[in-house]
Amino acid sequence: MKVVVDYFKDILGGIKTLITGMKVTGKYFVSPGEIVTQQYPENRETLQMFDRFKGEVIMPHNDKNEHRCTGCGICEMNCPNGSIEVISKWEIVDEKKKKAIDKHIYHLSMCTFCGLCIKTCPSKALAFGQEFEHSVFDRSQLTKILNKPNSVVTKDLKE
Amino acid sequence: MFLYDFTQLTSSIHSSLVESFGEGALTTTIELAIAGVAYLTFFAVLGLFLVYLERKVCAFIQNRLGPMRVGPWGLLQTIADFIKLLMKELIYIKSADQFLFNLAPFIVITASFLAIGAIPFDKGLQVLDFDIGVFYVAAVSSLGVLGVLLAGWASNNKYSLIGAMRSGAQIVSYELSVGLSLMTIIVLAGTMQFSEIVAGQADLWFIFKGHIPAMIAFVIFLIAGTAETNRGPFDLAEAESELTAGFHTEYSGIKFALFFLAEYINMFIVASIATTVFLGGWMPLHIPGLEGFNHVMDFIPPVLWFFMKAFTVVFIMMWFKWTFPRLRIDQLLTLEWKYLLPLNLINIVLMAVVVLLGWHL
Image (cartoon, one colour):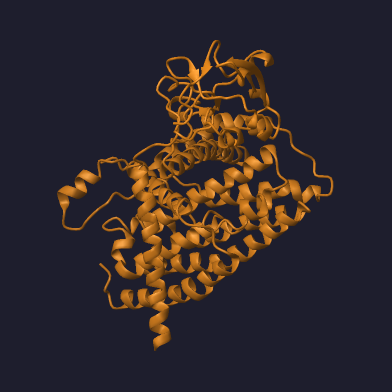
C-alpha cells in the first residue's frame, strides 16, 4: 500500500515542481521587468555600460592635469602580449635625479583586456574605460599615448 | 452567427469544374492540385509564423526582445531566414546513402501533410473526413519517425544515428500514450470521425463534458504530444548539447529547412488534434443554460475559434520547451512506461465507467 501511496505522491510532487517552474517563466513572459536586450545603434546616446565593463585601458587624470603614473614599468613587464611600452625620462627634482614618465604607449590592437596591468599597477594609475567603439580606418590610430601632453605625476601619490 | 458551411464552397468549385472539364480524371486532378497548393501555402505561412512565434515567446520568457530588425518587430525575419536557407549550398555527403538521405526529409514532410489534411478548421473545411479520422491521424503522424530514422541511418554519422535511435525509442513509447488518451475521448464521443467529434461538442467541449478523466487525458495528450514532435523537453533526437543536431546534423539548405518546417508543423498538428478532440475544434465556447453568453460566443467566426485554441495549445508547448530541462533517455522511458501508460490505462477504464453510468455532463 505504501508503494502505491508513494507512487501517487511522486506524481503529485513532480507536477508541483513543474508548475513551480512554469510559474517562473510565465511570470517573466507576462511581465518581463527589465529587458536585457540593448538595441545598440539606436540607443547609442543613452547606452550606459556597467561599472566592471572592460572597454580599454585608460590613465585617469585629475583636473590639474595630473596622473598617478611614476613610470616604473611594472605594467609593461606584466603585459602578456606586449601591448604596453613605457618610455621614461629623468627629471631633476630638488637637485636629485628622479625617474618620470615620458610616454605611456598603449597598443589597443594587441590588447586582450586581461586587466593585468591595472591589477599590478602599484600606484593605481591605470583603469578600464567604458569606451567600446574602437573601429578606426587606420591601424596606427589604435596606438595611443595614455598620459596627456604636459601632464605631471600627482604630488599626493600616497593617497 | 457566422456558421458558414464550407462544403457549399467546395461543391460550387466542384460543379463549376465539372461544367468546364466534365466528370473524370481531369477534374479530380485539378481539384487535387488546388487542395495541394492551398495546403502548401498554408504550410509555408504557418511554418514561418510558428518559427517567429517561437523566437518571440522564447525571448519574452528570457527577458529579451527577440528578432526586432527585419520588418516591424522583426516580422519578416523568418522570411529572410527562409530565403537564406533556400539559397544555401546543399552539401554533398560522400559516405551517405544518397537515395535514403534525400528521401528522408520528404517522408517527414509528407507525414505532416497527410496528418493535417484530416483536421477540420471549420465546418467542411477539411480535405479528408474519414469515419476513422482519429485513427488515421494517429497512424500517419507516426510515419514521420520513419523519415527521422532514415535520416539518421543514411547520414552515416554517429550523432545522427544515436539521435535517430533515441527518436525511434521515444516515438514507439509515446505513440501508445497519444493513442490511449485519444481513445479515452473516443469512448466519450462514440465516434472516430472528426466532423462528428466536433459536432458532438456543440453544447459543451469534451474536456468539460468528461470532466476528471477527460482532463487527465488532456494533460497526458499534451505531454505525449510534445514528446511525439521531438520538442523540448523531449528533444533527445536533436539534443544540441550532446549530439550537435542529432538526426539532421548532416543536412543543409532546403533539406534542413524541410525538417525544420516539419517540426513546427507537427507541433501545430498536435495542437490541432488537441483542439479538435478536447477543446471543441471550431465550436465556440458554449455553456448549457447560458443562452445569451452562447449567442455572443457564436459571433466569433469558427475559424478564429479554431486558431485561437490551437495557438493557445502551441503556446503551452512552447512554454514547456523554454521552462523544462531536457530529460535523459532513461528518464524519458520511465516517464512513459511507469507513469503515463498505467495512468492512461486506469483513466480509460474510469472514462468507460463514467460513460456507462452517465456521469458525464
